Length: 137
Image (spheres, one colour):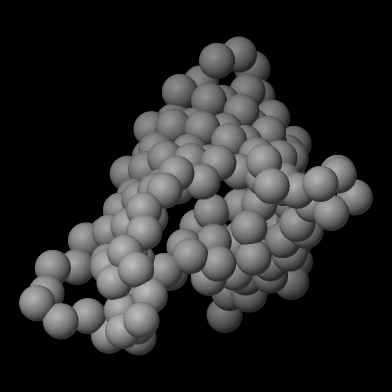
């Protein structure tokens, strides 16, 4: 779910969240939901976390560059609960990520790029760069 609130000319505040829950007597690692990366929890590697309960809240401040392109600053907060699997114990935790990015509409398709950090990153030079290309036919 997402909510878009226009603030000023060409400026938009976005708030939203998503989540998934899997309930079962027995869990297999391949059944768990993945969280992390460009489309789910920015600031972490792709599929960094896996759990039977995952959720992400996000806030973004967007500056519209044109009708379909924008630059943005964001904050993501993810939650992951993983059941005990085999020799591993059950875990749960909150994982924040934050950064800057751009979405550009081009003749080729939509290009997205973001630079994101999380609290475990030792220096800004170790942040995550997420790149994406969506081509429409």
